[in-house]
Figure 1 (tube, rainbow, N blue to C red):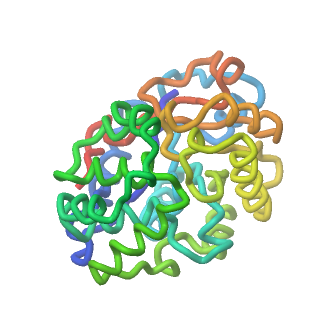
Figure 2 (figure 1 turned 45 degrees about the vertical axis):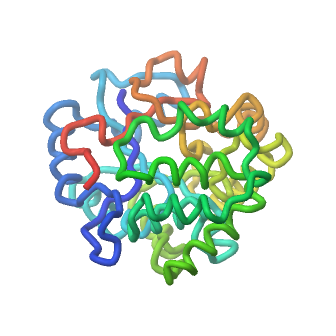
Length: 309
């Protein structure tokens, strides 16, 4: 089986001319390509795999997954899946619903979509003091983050600083300062799938899972901090009725550098049945026994028509 992960599937927004996303037209083309080349795993086949370890008879079929819960997943992805009689797994962080704010990781994406990456990087460097970035974090994450994508100049380094290097104590304030300098505002109400929309999607057969509370790089946190992140997220998802479905989670950022053994231990303790990472490999039969909390997913850009606009 081939699990595929998507984030933003949308149309061009003139207010975000540099925003990286998969155009809805190419999403449709990719679904056509998947249908012709591989076929799709049915929900029943998927549940048989995660609960009984039973693989579909036809190998290599596609499972569609979507991270972060942007509203475009409701307005563009959901109707397309319904029209094609498909289903998907959608992973949400709970903080936007509890604190009514756009997550820091998404505020970084929005800034990168609105402004030149090199100018953003220069602005961040002007404001950062040495004590805000532990040297150990630079060494830990420098060479293994944002290596799967080609970004505009300055963007990858800007994202590394704000998502991986900086001590989280200072991140929100720094983002606020940069946004204020650029006279840019973040609209929480329009950015995420609403609770009512989530319930409509569940009614139509979509599955929802946890994606931490604040979309933190879990490997940056202590085990107790990770536990709080995961517990809050699982509690939020459990508020939506999904009878008979096993509990599921996807790792924020997804790469193996973004979580650790403590993360896996907590997920097991909390009774989560399966979790996704991001790794360009197929899911094998023994994965649900040996690595059920790091099931691999291909990024959509690995396949034809999946390159970001």
